[in-house]
Picture 1 (cartoon, rainbow, N blue to C red):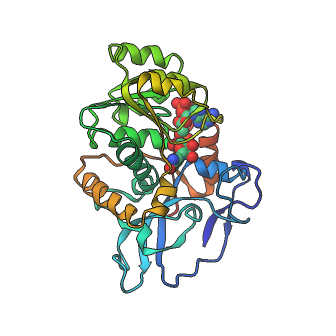
Picture 2: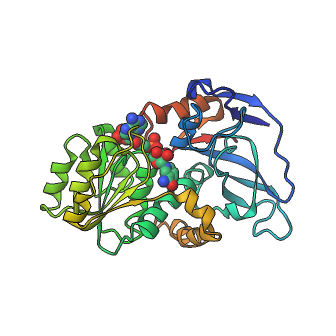
Length: 323
Ligand SMILES: NC(=O)c1ccc[n+]([C@@H]2O[C@H](COP(=O)([O-])OP(=O)(O)OC[C@H]3O[C@@H](n4cnc5c(N)ncnc54)[C@H](OP(=O)(O)O)[C@@H]3O)[C@@H](O)[C@H]2O)c1
């Protein structure tokens, strides 16, 4: 089969497309992959900078959408089913994957393979962050950093269905503002000066939740943008720098900084992924949550697709088409 392959840790440009053996399918759901999601950890994996460090050579790719080729008799999916799946966290950018049945979910008929490949990794992270860790309540306002990225557009699509009455998107450019708007943002502000813009938009009150996949030097202004009782959800560090917190700010303003590590949570909570999908699937099937509108690259351009996340040119969710 064809697969994107990392053979050396020299960054996205070193990602090749090569012929490799198909995975063994014993006791697993074997899936013909139609599309694979690209996420920021794939860019980190190309440089050996992610906490998870597979042995070389390996294929990146945390999520896929495709058609079941074969499945164990007791699985909840069968040959021919349209599905999406999580690799946790590599191997997805390949024509065939073999996954444990509990990481495979039925793809709603209304959702294409390309859109489907952009759902699980970000939407389940965002749902976990907003609901389980962030305690999002009906009518709250959510500020989303990196709002034109994968996690960001997911947060803008999901937050209203989970109860938010307003989303404020933070982006670096006007072009990215358009992406955030089409993902459903109520308001969009530029990263430069976002604190003053948020203060003005909220009449000085601040927001209930900040969802932050960026980190870096905007962290203190994010804390200052919280309303009393607000929560800042730490999701990632695309900005590169891991911020530090002066805890007196938490005490003085009665705000929380909350870690949101979905992968670790799902590993320590068996059945959690299925619970999450049981909530998300009807929202996607009914259109209450719109499917992602990904930027699609052919497998042959895996290197460019992954590079677009590292060099910050990605527009919304990025997906590779394999079939
Ligand atoms: N906690 C979890 O369980 C979990 C799960 C999945 C992913 N993540 C993390 O979430 C983060 C976002 O992932 P993603 O797939 O959404 O990434 P993405 O699509 O590349 O989006 C990230 C956004 O970060 C912003 N950014 C700011 N500084 C940047 C820089 N120096 N380089 C690149 N981007 C920069 C960009 O927006 P602007 O240009 O508009 O600033 C970009 O749109 C990553 O750190 C990832 O590891 C965490």
